[in-house]
Image 1 (cartoon, rainbow, N blue to C red):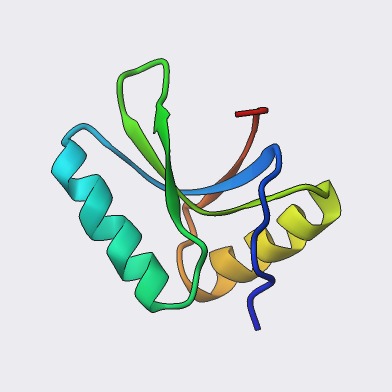
Image 2 (cartoon, one colour):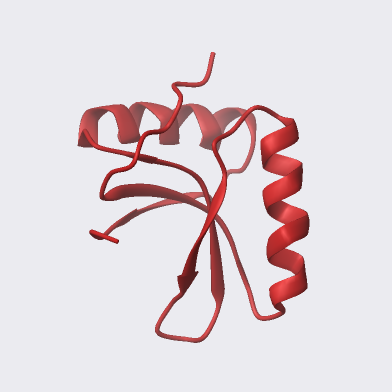
Length: 83
């Protein structure tokens, strides 16, 4: 079971895309799987970042990240930033 994301500064990144159209496709895919996916803007390299979800507590984010890396996407990573 996936812990549902809340607004917070811990974000689990599922993808970073040069082409903005790919953002919408990825968000839709993740939302269909039950994730609270959203777009959090472009990073310093101009890549558009999509997150599985955002968390207030670091422990919750790390727990969700471990599960996502194991079940969904081994290259997902934790991004820490107040948005």
